[in-house]
Image 1 (cartoon, rainbow, N blue to C red):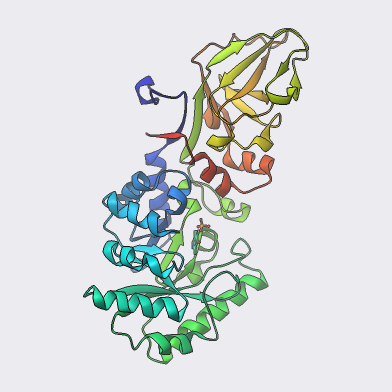
Image 2: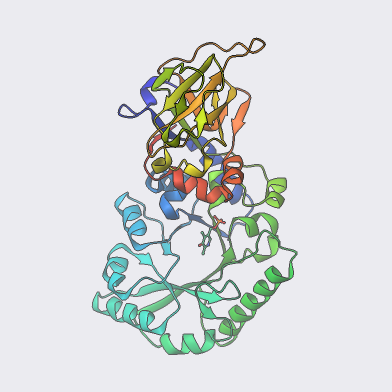
Length: 383
Ligand SMILES: *Cc1c(COP(=O)(O)O)cnc(C)c1O
């Protein structure tokens, strides 16, 4: 990568491949019919990828709506110039209502108290408050129970300040679309939607699919799908990976800030959990630590890529830095690493690659969390 793209103030950064993001968005768009809409989920700063910049790319690549998790995420999207509809995937405190109305952020609604306060706020502001109704079909997280949607709609729909722009549910087990649990959620959602339609309540945009459901089940797309992880080129599960290739969008890189050859037996980093086992071991430091999303639980267990080859990370990962070792052997002579050389923590280097999935397995978590974590502090470079 060209040197001028590297942040000037720190030798560790996240690279975001806008071309890959655009192609992933188009690939999901391509799964949909002409009247089906694509809601791009950009919560948690676009899963760590930077919501403002990613939303711009998504908007030009065919997004119809954006979804966020918090009111402030929605406000920041508006401040960055996004004009498409924004859906808040949760029901916020009543105190957030003025901001929702000011920035045209559609809240999720599932309590009458919030819904009526939102309607009142809208009337006072001389507007109509659009909302999406969350339906509880089995995840047991948020929403109006699927058997109580009519009662709920009757309790709020009289309000002239409210307009139902959509109804949705969320799947707990969309990685197993043949499973009984998933099928039951589908059936309950369909029942609830039909009940509202039969009773004359307009449902607006009906939606339930997340990334795995969108990739694995063509029958539940309704009017819109809500795709998150897949847009960033990360597979939600193995079954999905077999269906559709995606291009990873985020890479994590650093430059070596120091190299040294400690004597055999010397320790490295806090607690000396690694000691130099023999001569001819070069210890290299990179300015990337657990406050950047490189979990400390990976200490002494992960690799980085240097000159297209794997090298073991050694010693405890610190808050802002960590070390790795280059071991010369008589049969494998590597050139000495130098101050300023590039290291890949996530991504490709030549033929070698370290994926979010590899790091997620090592950490005992999912790629979603690994990506979000790298979004915390590292500067982002958009390619
Ligand atoms: C996060 C989220 C999504 C997106 O899920 P992915 O698996 O990343 O596609 C969709 N809907 C809701 C309600 C969510 O919370």
